[in-house]
Image (cartoon, rainbow, N blue to C red):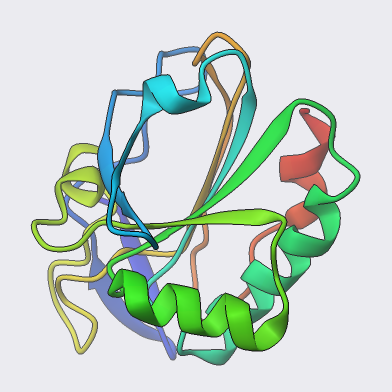
Length: 165
């Protein structure tokens, strides 16, 4: 269980992030067109998983914008923005913002991705949503970088995530 804060108040997640050097577990996440995305859909690509509670918060929206900007310059890399938001909200946000360099994926309805990767918040006002975290994966599905953002209102360390690509 990871301990993080929300506005300085202690909250917890269901576990710890997967370890660097291990293989990312397969997943089934919902795309904005309501089809299913799995890890195999991104085989042979590097991945930046930008994980957050909800695209409808300022910090989460900022991270999607920042990674969208960076993604246009990344070779053989997909940026996956993952939350428990409904796919409709993710599509609305990126459409309104003109963001087309990231792939939005929803962990609706069960939150199985968050549970499998220790990301689900267990207490406090955001219980059931994902914590803010970054997981970077190489072309072979091996995790090369992780960051559990300690204060959920803070942005992740973009430079550290992008430096391992």
